[in-house]
Length: 115
Image (cartoon, rainbow, N blue to C red):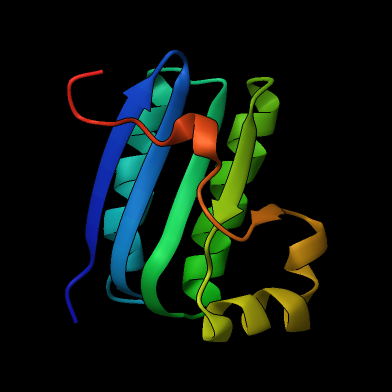
């Protein structure tokens, strides 16, 4: 399955919307998006995972790597709206205590068109 990644940035914050499956084959695409994004130096990144059907350990490692780099830059990386299967992986691995996990994308980061 194809992985789609789109990023919206506003006032030093970025929302990365991910659609599809994050696995061994698609994780490099997500990794390259994080690499590009982190060069811009946002202070906060929220990953909207509401359209992610599956995330394996390779995908989790990409998220952890991005979290580490964000912390090194003094920023924060958060996970929003994980579906039940992804939330279960976060819980089983204990990563739900490593990441800030939101039930949905925080309201203040929902940017409407034209704003």
